[in-house]
Length: 304
Image 1 (cartoon, rainbow, N blue to C red):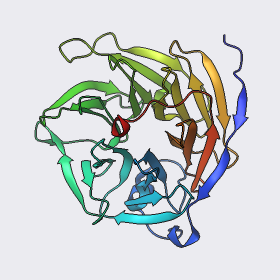
Image 2: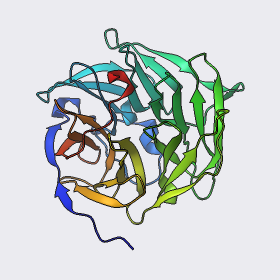
Image 3: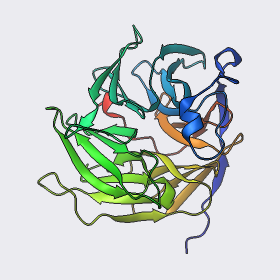
């Protein structure tokens, strides 16, 4: 057993302003989810653009926000969808993992959202959760739906730059956040209802083999969003535990970051001038947290 890692407490960076909170409004997404969900919003999918603005989504009400470095919020899109994850390409394009529609593309100027990939072999996806870029522009994304230990049919896909969609896994009980190792030879997948992170090695021909559990967690609801730093340490947002864990490349716990607010630490992104600030969406209270860390985050594909 490992000794408990040192712990620090995050601070509040900014809160979803009261006029943007949808308390009392109906959300089909919220009504269809098990367990209690916050009424005002469900913040997820943080990602930074090259100007230092933080984008995040509101799954429950189909909204995308841009947050300035000073913490000011702007609603840039509200559409018929359930945006669950968001990442920004190096050319500025904003991709959304949309739980209702598929992989989508957002135009931040007009607020329009258009489809990129909505089917695999003519069939609709279950419900896409999160995505990540490879350095060659391929997109890896998770297809979670309402899967879990009762229904281990969640999937992981790759959308190649030529438009080809490859199904890599189809037996995952609730695939959620996804990141690539520094050498991009392995994908790490947060498997929420298994309370674990799976390690998915890639073969030279683009397939996968010898998939296994990399980290087994306990308590809370399970791992949600993932990130990786420049040393290859894995960052795990542990939803319903109010914690973010940083684990070494061999799975040793290095640091625990505690939420000073609610327990729904859903996702995170590195930012700040030196990329040493971890920004965390805390969805129960509609809050963006932040914490200073020693190792800078791995630059997103948008920054390479």
